[in-house]
Amino acid sequence: MDRNRTMKSPMQSIALSLVVILLCLSSTTIVTAEGGAQQTFYVGVVPQYDARKIHRIWMPILQALEKSTGAHFKLVGTPTITDFERKLNAGLFDFAYMNPHDLLLANKRQGYTPLVRDMAERLHGVLVVKKDSSILTPAELDGKTVAFPAPNALGASLMIRADLQDIFNIKIRPRYVNTHSSVYLNVALGLNSAGGGVQQTLDQQPQKIRDSLRVLYQTRDVPSHPFSVHPGVPPALARQVREVLLALGKTEHGQSLLMNIPIKNIGSTSMEEYYSLHEIGIEQFHEEE
Image 1 (cartoon, helix red, strand yellow):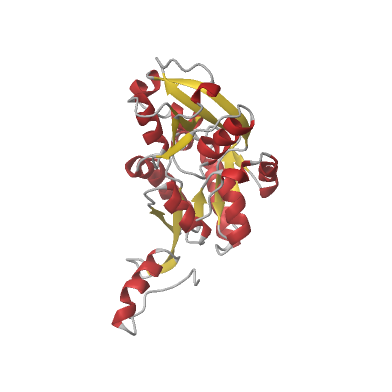
Image 2: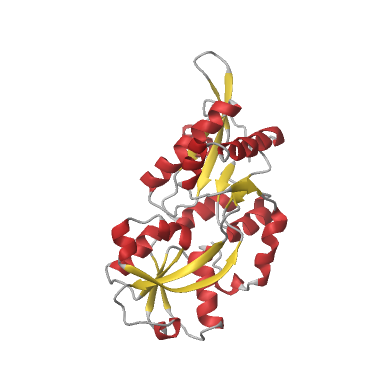
């Protein structure tokens, strides 16, 4: 795929739709009002929240990157985690915020490498039930329906399902509801016996939702979500992006922006930090697209 494609007139009308789609999903060069060239880089964010919240969180951060680097960053919306993973594994994002398991797959398939992550907290899955639920242990979920955001969500699905089978020796009926927020809402409304999420997204829920839930179980932990880069991005820009994000973490305003992701203490990371995921044994529940 040409990751630096510029707009051209289509040679055949039958190909117009395909050309437009490809242009929207690969890096392009645009002309600014001043007549200079400005390259656009596409950013994907795993949809743990609804699209409006993701936009509110990430647009100020991308604007800070634009101001410091001179490049243009476009947030690419994906309605579901599955859709995000499909685009990620096809290499359609220049930069992406993803879960650690997705990083291992995207590194193998496309060569994505991590730039930064939250150093303050590691990722672990949380299994929640309604606050007044009679369920007191995960073993009591045997045969019951449990909500998850997506089959391959790491902490919120894969790690929880692995523990339920390997530690508690039970089988549940998974129900996928697309986002972490939808999981918590489904459980709060009593539509499912329990639901899988991660502590970071649970903490971001409205107070009314948090007050109606109880954490039943917490999984082991792994390194947190990385913000990663595709190998097609110029190395100098990748370094700039890392430096700008690290610099944001040193200012009060920047810290407030990063906390919304949430990233409490941003730091540099590398692939070596994520290889330990191979030891967890979550591959048994991973679903190929």
